Length: 277
Image 1 (tube, rainbow, N blue to C red):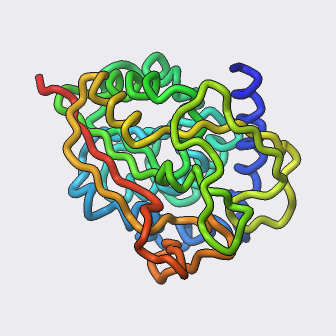
Image 2: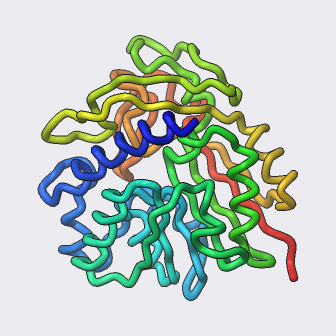
């Protein structure tokens, strides 16, 4: 398992340096410095369901270079970002400093988040798109979430749908299922020198390992960890070009299937709460 983790960390270190490029077209990080009101497309999509988070103690797990983390802080939350990539966290800190945002950042694998941050400290645990697929055990993750939440605290997750993770992205004519919808002990192994956003060079750490987690597995893991599910919404869009050749970009930064728009879920939002005091 440590070999999988090390390979994934090397890949995300590599991606972080590219994604944080001030002149890059992918994450467009310069906009957060130029515009003090700028929010990421992901957080703008989530904002209505997130509601008023002013003053809340928020932790953003697997925060990468911190664009969503910074956006949550701009909504008035007191935010901590956590990620296993030292380069990702360094870039997140640099962006926060350049944008004048007060965000705390911690380098840690999500499995060690409770020991790294402290138990029961947060009113809101936030996890965004493209996070769960890097975790080998959804039950272990759910226990971490429960451990971080204060009594009555809330989990908010928006993630790519597991049916999308099961699709073969190399076939451009239609949606074809190829991979397991369910969690498996052995990960899918990938060897790819490209990222999911446009960058000016290829990746050098190309091998990654991923795990899918079905909706039922996610829900059951959270229930078993003592949380109560308060909402589950499936969306017909996702904020990246998940199936090249089959998707079109909407004005809100979301991608939808151009031939089969609305026929299958591409992402979902799940909310859950911890028991009260």
